[in-house]
Image (tube, rainbow over all chains, first blue to last red; front, side, top):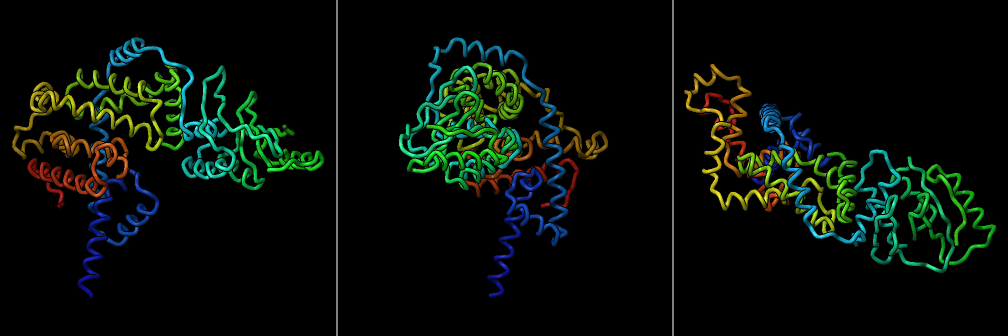
Length: 224
Length: 189
């Protein structure tokens, strides 16, 4: 039993040692980084080996930085080759991920944990987006043209606050049980679907009023 | 690389897929030096490395519409660069390329004692890093200089994650041996 426990401890220690280079470079997940930190705090020998890793890291960076940069010839060659390529259509089919990236990046200048936020946003958007999205480059920004044309239900048009993060927008959509079904249109307006059934004028006005008060929304109006 | 930069790279790729030359210029300006250095460390010839980076970015121009965003753009670039560098190395043995750049590699004919007298420890470490095998140089650079995670290195090099960890370990072990041969005993391994 003790032998097994020792073997497990030995294996974990070896595993932590293997991770030291990534810990020094700051590219471990939070969980692994915490595991390495805990091991370093309890093992002086490991800590001294970690100093060797840090030394190597610093010199590897210096070595690479001394390699210089390519001459302008590389860029000239590249664009000469690009110019020689056959012209391509400006309308390009892109994956949903790329559309989502443009969508999110269009109104969130703040630093954010993009991956997690985009994933959460994707879940909300799934309810409203059933088909692939085609993006074509327009004069300003991008225009989605392949969103399903949903006819029934209650809709509003909104412009998201440029300072709103993807997380805040995700929460806003979730709280309001809304799904993006169109946009961005001119002025950065997006069409949101609120319900499967139509709402009365007074109900819709109340929703617009509530949404307008949200810090996530810069402008909201009824839509057909 | 920050989350914002990664996101911005993906936007550029989307625009490049639509034929936007300006987006291509921005992406090139942002990444070409690092890609060049990665390739140069593999092929050890500046002219070859310059040729390769224009080919790498030409591939990006051609394939941008197929980029699915499953990995960072910088990881994709290094994967393409590695493939092209290895293709060159297959056509031209590394020994020949090493010879061409012999002038750039420091003389190691001194005895360990003389070397220590002439050089600082840091210089010796850099020299030994240069003398690692191509396989070991590659992984050391990807981890230390290009800041790639275990998963990203696995994707670029095309090996399992466990192998990434052990290859890095053996690269460091080899470095320690080279340092020892130069008179630097680090007490590990």
